[in-house]
Image 1 (cartoon, rainbow, N blue to C red):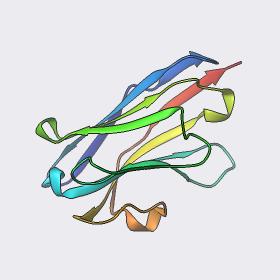
Image 2: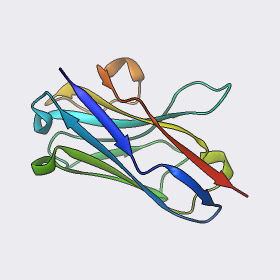
Image 3: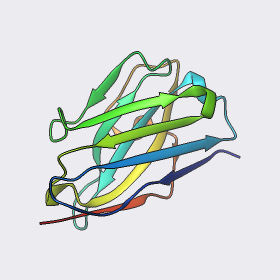
Image 4: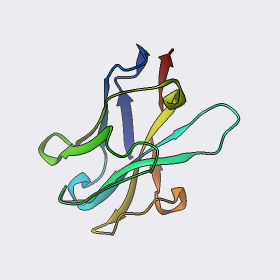
Length: 125
């Protein structure tokens, strides 16, 4: 059974930082692309960042480029999302998702098969 467990969310002031983690189990984690998505109330789910199975390639949504960094530690079956210079528009539930085996990165949610339960990030002004 595949499980993805996000952690690291919370309340932070504008300009602050948070580091999210996504721990995976039940699959050969190191051969899958992984992505982070977010969803704010009343809005569609939005691609935030993705990392290739090797960790060599990353992709970011336009709204987070230059502020967020995705990385992975395959030895720990964990993906991280370092979020800097947070602003209230970053407030959302953040989800980790596993995508394609040895696949290319994708920004569409339909390319991802397994999802975590989400972690809330709230940025106050």
